[in-house]
Image (cartoon, rainbow, N blue to C red; front, side, top):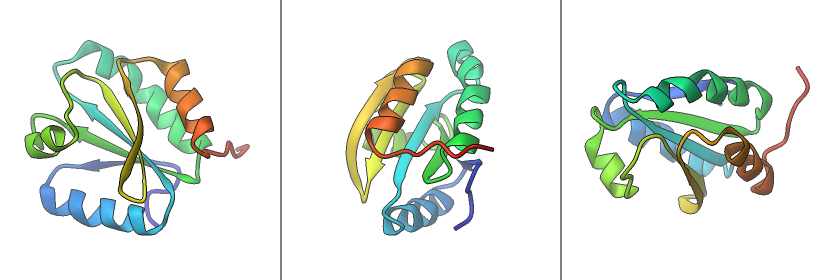
Length: 118
């Protein structure tokens, strides 16, 4: 599956729908970073999130700009940036609001993320 060890940025609804469908069918844990270009904490956490995607290769990492895909942000009830939504097989299992690196890491571990040594 594409996107292993990297963050998949979705800029259109078509790409998002296709990629999230593939990810759900893979039964892997999914984490979505709802971000905005004008948001300083989002810019701070972006490289950390990218680093996590390299460590947790059994998790699918997505990045969505709320200004580009407002309908997706609404669907997931995102009200603040950054918001990280954790999903498994189409069901939301957890969320973290804010650039809380340790909390994101904890939720990845809690929901079955495995750290692979690079």
